[in-house]
Picture (cartoon, helix red, strand yellow):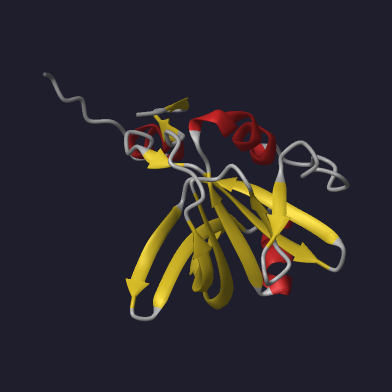
Length: 164
């Protein structure tokens, strides 16, 4: 195997870090009567004591302002069968009205939407927000969780979807 050094720029960076396989989740929040949702692959467990997780949100995304205002959010870890949801919630500028209607979901105790078909769901309250360049690192205290499905996980690797 031959290793090629590449220049350090955003395009090369994206290609290189895309070699790290990740799970895919949709993060949701609610401001007033309006649901907001965003696909993320930058979601991770942070701490067992206290129970903390994080995700990253691009600062210019409308979801960023909504999640900071709401202070609560939900995470639905997607199975392979929900690739269409991942693709849908990854698109910018889609109408907010009725955006969740295509996927069965329920409201958690905090009022956020959680997908019924998810592999795992978590409800969180924002504990900290850290600067992460063009993104914010949103750290949340886990307030509720469930593992409703044992289906195959949806994965993202090298710019495409896959599964185990």
